[in-house]
Image (cartoon, rainbow, N blue to C red; front, side, top):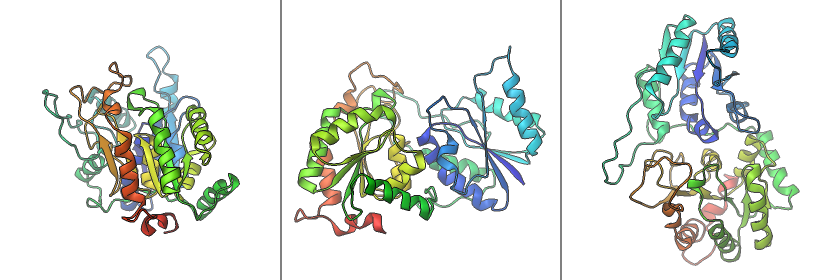
Length: 364
C-alpha cells in the first residue's frame, strides 16, 4: 500500500506526533508511507528535517498552503504528485484546534484523488470552554492523536507504552559525541541543556533568571550547561556561557537530528516550552519545563514520565496569545528558587552529591 500521512506544524508538533507515526509504521510495516505537510519558510524546521532517517516515513512531500483561487497552480502540482504515486489510504494527524472547515477541505482534497480509506478526518474534539474557573488538565495532544487513529482501526499502544524516539543511528549518536568533544567537553561530564529561547514571546521566562539558574548548575551541581536552539538564541546563549565561565553554545549551528544527538548525551533539560524541550524528551532526557498559562495544562507537556512541569495559574489562562499584554505574568510567577530546587532534586542526592542514576543516564 501507499499511505499518505497528513501532518503539519512545527518541530514540537512533529515530535509529539512520533507515537502516532510509530503506531502507523507498526501497523503497516511493509507499506510505502508518504509524509504530507505544508511548506515551511526559509530557515524554519520542516518535518523532513526531523523525521528523515528515523524509518517512520519513506517519502516527503510539501505543498504551498498560500495558494489563492487566482493562482492554484501549486495545489494542482501537489495533486498531480499524489496522483502519480497512487495513494491507497490517507491518515490525518490534526490538532484539536484545527477548524472543521480545514479538516473537511483536506478530506475533500483526498477524496478528489479517489482515496476511499481516510482515517482521522472526523470533526476535531472541542477544547473545554473557558468559564472563569481554572482550566482542566487535558490528556497530552499526542494521546489524542493516538485515540483518533484507534477509532480508525489502527493498532495503538497503551498509555506509557508509546514509542517516542527519533531512532537515531549509532553514527548520529557518535556525531553528537564528537560535536561535544570538539567544543572541549568530556562525555563523562554531567551536561544540562538550558533552553533559553522561544519563538513565542509569551512563553519566555526572563533571561536574567536563566542566568541565575545556570550559575547554580555550574557552581553548586558541578554540571556543564549546553545551549541548543535556533540562530535567534545564539547571542543570549553565548553571553550566558561567557558569564558562567563554562559551557557550550550550539544555538543556530546544528541540524535537528544533530541537536537530538547532542541531547542524547545530556542528563537534564531546563527551559521554556519549546521544540528543543520536546526533542530532549524524545531522547529520554528528563525535563524541568517552564510553561506559560497560554494553553490548557497537560496538553503540550513533554512526552514520557518523570518530567517536572512548573506552571502558574493566572486569571487570563488559556489566552492562546503569542505576545502577552501583561508582561508575561504567568512566567514571572515561576521563581528561580523553584527551578533550582527541581534541579537539586533531579541531579543531587540527599548529601548534595551527584546522583549516580542521573549521572549515568546518557550512557544507558
